[in-house]
View 1 (tube, rainbow, N blue to C red):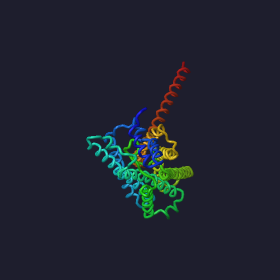
View 2 (view 1 turned 135 degrees about the horizontal axis):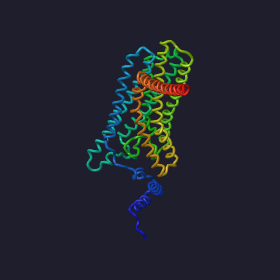
View 3 (view 1 turned 120 degrees about the vertical axis):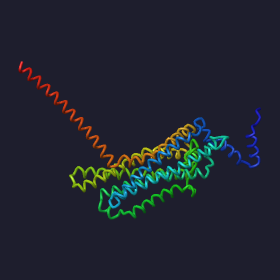
Length: 389
């Protein structure tokens, strides 16, 4: 007969001392999945800080360039209807910039802590999902706050433009600079309130595979509060995208109808040109946000639901862990791509692209007409030569 293992002896001792409760706890300990063990064969050493530093540098540079452009435009259009849009856009870029600086600094500090340890770099860099520390709680809150803010601001900008295009008189009476600043403060407060919910025991932040970033607990030990928190976060984010889509669609259709209905005077045409520029930028913001944030929202919601219902086995845990990593990488690119919406989709840039395209089309048309004229001339000359003969 095989000798009992030390773990078995320890379990028997606990059973003898604590009655019937010990075997159940021992069985739960045996069946408790080890999250790091489930994906241990996929775990790699921490990446070089060069990638994180490059992303942080690009994000800060692009957002600063876009912020300078928006501030100059705001000073130029301070008394016009575009000022409200520029104030929202400047706040959005400033929020993205703050997110890059705060989150990027925390990630780089973790890299510095890992390189300063000479014993075990990987264990120093990677956190324990069962025991998240204060830095993990802070990083998870930043993920939620700086994730919701751009989506809320994009939704508010789309609603403001839809009101300005469809009902300009009501927009002029309701929308003021003071109310716009109040709306900005309310948006930031709402995002901060949602991010601080785990500190009131509604949900929890923990390390996510490969244990180098933090987000809502969706994989291991998911409780009803974690699922509710994930549903709330996803519902707010997806609702913002849906409202922005509806408002941008209504604004676009209204502008197309106004353009096709009649030719307006030059001043009114200039106003419509500004509206078109803003709607194009809003569509760019919406498309970028949908592409970058939808994977993380969908995968996180599915993972939390499967984990809470107990349907998340080892294979699904491995797959959804990889999908969550892909989703968060795509989400971080939203803050890098947002500034390019303002840098590239400005009216001056669009006008230059339109002129270049028009010149190329005109050149191709002239070349085609010239070629057709040469063919006709050759055909006529051939006919005349035949007649003379």
